[in-house]
Image (tube, rainbow, N blue to C red; front, side, top):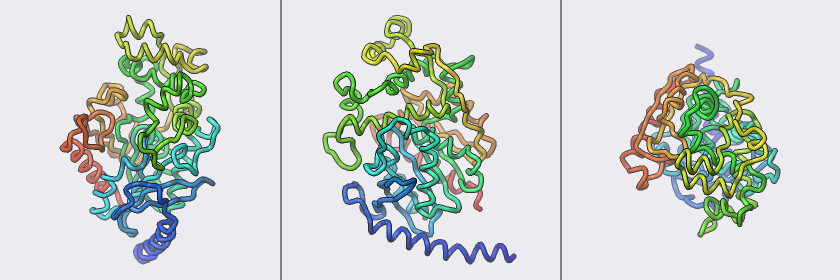
Length: 368
């Protein structure tokens, strides 16, 4: 009884401490970020000796939810979800992560090893005073990173639940990329891995990747001013491979992509981007050197059935359930890769399904 009382009496104090901290952080708000209108505030958050531009929404006493964006995305992608969760009493935090926030763009490839990116997640949670328990949500690369964080030894004591948007568990994903259970359509779709990890990939070929994927007609803090800045985001691909958390698919030639696999657009890109040095040294691909462990926190995997990049409704991806030792939920929606933004490739009704599934997942997770 005394333990329970101490925990209950401690909750108002924790909320007050969090409110005070957040008040200080909001005072140091970034004036460049968009969408900084109630219920969303924009803050600069120091963590891991870096400075992260973040968006925050919801009551200070609410259960914390930390959100990790993907590539080449920004924390702004979570704003509709943050507004929705704020209405249900959750305190959401989404930051422009390493390589994206201007104060968190170290220049070296080695600075984007996934182990360092995972340490950012814990440091951001600590800096925001999410020091006890929080929910975690990730999309795309943020989803891959989220699996790594949610599968770490620290996760059971701090992470209440995990939601991966579009990305299967890394071991399931790796099985689809290399080995006896490899999925050929996914291997073809993932040929860009070997292109993005080439040296100076953002700058070569007339800065094609930067202008095609990273440039913005209306520069804000949620944009890259040049190819050099955009290279930091591309380093996430090097980082997951350097950490050995994901298998590398075979390197298919332009001729095979065009004639054997009937993928002319990928073949054209292969002509421009022959592949990283490690890819060419081992063109058959390789297994993950340090596979991500099983996840022991309640997990939700949301799949866009029309996703052309991550074919998350194919058998290899559905094996994600084998790598979650806690409660597991799989939700398929008729969307492409982005399952949170209303668009021609993700109708409003499907986005609503995703939002409802996330809220239900948070509510069903065991409370500490």
